[in-house]
Length: 269
Image (cartoon, rainbow, N blue to C red):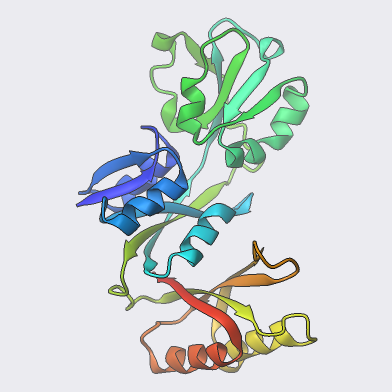
């Protein structure tokens, strides 16, 4: 069994992958499209994708990737606590730092610290927090990384600024275990996306949400995303409490499909 996730070694995604599938061999990829492609082609059996952060909201690229892959479905969820640290060359001070490398989500989650303590620095987005750490080589380099990556910094000639630098100290990222095929649907939560017909007509979204209300389903998440090739149109990602295989959920989704231009089951967990 192989599980794919964003690398390099030590990334938050690798930590989550090991929690979601402890017995699987972890295979690391450079970016999220490569992770998804590996599952689609059968290079791995499952993947771990971050879908939402409690500060930054949805991980939009991954929401789109999951929606666009018709045969991939989320089957399990894991909530990973996130603690960010600022790492820089030993002996330097904050005033010496010129560049801060990290994943865009981490940079966004530490925006207050960066604006107050490091207003002079240049944020340097990279594909993972672990890659950011590997970039700290020259004078003035720094990175925002997970607390789990701070072991052994001294031996590498690095040190960490004291404490968690995230804007919100209680910070969590929701990861989903994604597999190929509709084989794992007997779960208490259902995650779907849809695009309403005639969205700009008054009441279009209300009609769709009314279906959820009429069946007494508890909606635990909703997020909108613009449709890339259709300006002004949006698709909606919704999570509800309810077993996909139950008769009630079957009737509710059938009613939603009748008033949707597009619909996809994203997962059950």
